Image (cartoon, rainbow, N blue to C red; front, side):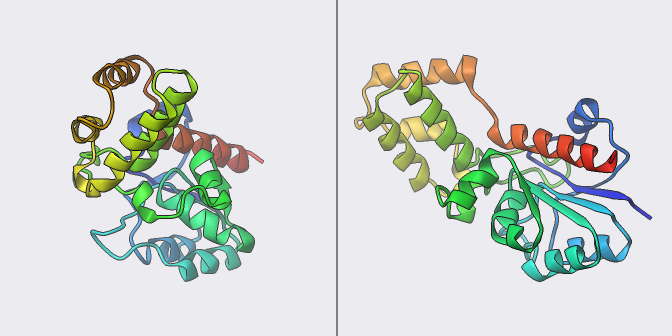
Length: 217
């Protein structure tokens, strides 16, 4: 019977997860509809939802999370599908972790599109950049004075205009040609080379830390 079940994929590799927080867990791929329900039926005590499918298959249903909570499981969510579901279901007892969860909860983020990306179906390596990472890195670059507020907003609109499987920093910057001064684009490119953050990965690591704390209670 699995005590801890973690649904993980493109946000963080299992190898990095286990290196950061050695956790006796049943590591499973991005959750599809019914996976949370099955984990609860199998007797999981802690269910950590990080990654889940969006458009490739039916996504995790709200009712199955509520079923797991009613069955006595601690259900945590962060980073991607987990952050989205936690922002919707924390009133029922699901625990949200991380910056992305907080942004959904506050209403700063609204759309599923913010965390959507494409990934290799075998290795789970990301093939596109999630909008939320782009958004928060643009925000950080603006706060550091790398780009202006107007350029931040224009670059973000260029990223939003891209279909999620095609999103990347380079395509966003190409789309900003003529809208953002070339020197600012180059400064942002330099910022990415040295200071880019992966916010989805950071939240996934924070959630694993929290799951480990609960498991050791």
